[in-house]
Image (cartoon, rainbow, N blue to C red; front, top):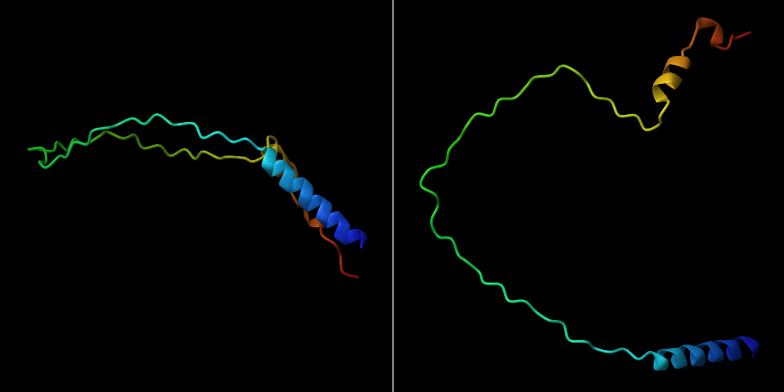
Length: 85
């Protein structure tokens, strides 16, 4: 009975809150834009070769700031490996 009463009160309060909401429908100013249709293609299309530089350098992105240092410090030696007894 308590659960039914709680649900009924919640529904009543929600309905009252929705009824108090005074929405106003303001008019929006619209802008008119003209459309221009292009039916002709240009007479010539110039194809110029763009000079590019060739670089042999590789750019690396690191997620963390000290990743280069951590990579250098995480080396493994033969004595680091576990021994089977």
